[in-house]
Structure formats: C-alpha cells, structure tokens
Length: 303
Image 1 (cartoon, one colour):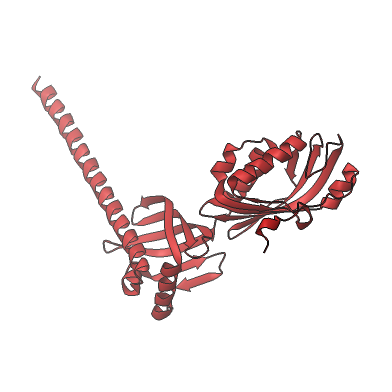
Image 2 (cartoon, rainbow, N blue to C red):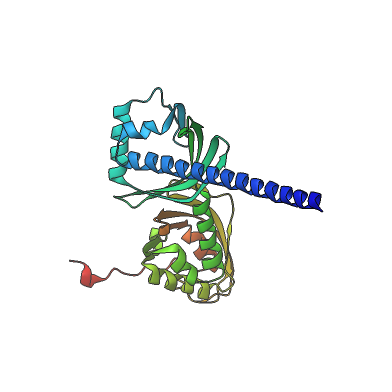
C-alpha cells in the first residue's frame, strides 16, 4: 500500500515538474517573441525618424537588404550612412507607410518576419505594394536583422482588374463598382466617340448603357495582364448582340466582335482611371452604319 502511495506521489511530481518545464519554455518563447517585436518596431521607427545610427544597430554586421524589382543589393558593411539618411528623409517626406499581414515565426535563435508594405505617394496618391521577408538572428540575447528581401506585389491589382471586367462588365454587378473604384474615377473611350465618364455614378450609367445595348455582352481577357507599379494593362475581346441604342446608333440585331486594351490606374487600393482603347470604325462597319457624330460640346461653357 505504501509503495503505491509513493508511486502516486512520484507520478504527481513528474507531472508537476513537466508542467513547470513547459511553462518555463513557454515563458521563454514569449520573451523571445516580445523582444523580437521590440527590435522590429525599433528598426521601423528609427527608419521613419531617419535615425540611421539606431536603425543600423538593429542589423547584424553581415546583414544585407535586397529589393528584387529595383535591382538593389546592399550590405550593412558597405552602407553610406549619409546616403541612407537622405534616402530615409526623402521617403518619409514623400511616402506614407503602411504594413499588413505581419507575422513572426521563431525557431530557436532564428526568426522569419514577413509582411506586406504599402507605400503611397503624398503627391500623386500612387501606391506601390511589396512583400517583405526578413531573417533575424538572436546573438547574445539581442535580435538582429540578417537579411531583408522585398518584391513588388502586383497580383492584388490584376485580381481587381479581373473582377472589374468579369463582375462589372460581364455580370453587371454595380455594387462591385463601389467596392473597386474611387468616387472620382475617370473612364475614357477612343477620342472619336467623345465618350468620357467622370465619377462613379456616370461610370455606372455607362455600364448600364452598354449592357442594355448588348445584353449578352462578353469581355474576355486574351492574354496575361501586365502590371507595373500602380497600373495594369489588359488586352481583351468584346462580343455581343446589338439589341439597343449605343452611342446614337439604333439597335441593328447584329452580332459584333471587337478587340481592345484597357489601362487601369490604381491609388489607395481603388481604380482611379480606366483608359479603354478600341477601334470604333471596326464596330460601326460590323453594324453597317456610318460613324456617328460625337456629342457637341456644351456651348454655354465655352467662352
């Protein structure tokens, strides 16, 4: 009986010791995460303050920063502090910084920090998004950045462009216009048509007009879209049956096909401009009509 009691006490002690070890390990991991976040925040805040000395104190002496799209490959050892300071000052005066999807992953004395960064021009409102991966190492109890690599993100802009074409033009979902477009969006058609829409409400009206004229409209993206900085270029094919008035031309009942290119410009996560380029003469020929005259300018505003 006594031996069973001793065994039970031993089991309880083993469990207690195990829990203490696990708690200590968890506390150590928490301390490591807290100190890593502190070092990461110090690095970002010192950059925003153009405090180059403090900024480089968060880097390992053999650290290196790489920006794939910009062709930048810089080492801490070769850094020119004054040039870096000037660069930080210019960036902070001309760009707004915002990060999202921040994640910390610690494995022993190393850690991976990943996040997306949005830089917005304070003058033009243009955005540039980058995906950043950083490798940190803990030396003598201090976290230091060993490697930072940034790559431009364009997938989000091409996804928005695809949704704009598929959901707005092909499906007629005007709620997506509110979601994707800036209130002051400007859409331009070929000059000979004289068609320009200013603002989100005029754009909605134009979408309704096109879909009323061509109820079975289908716009197909022909090739992979090209994304550069804050612009996306998409080549497309338009097809539909002319069953309603369009740009002054009454319904003909004819099926038409036309090709074109759209260049969408983005700012602060919204489409601010849509430049549509297509061949109006090709459309009028298929409809069997003479090119309609563009609307006359409002003489009351012309002085």
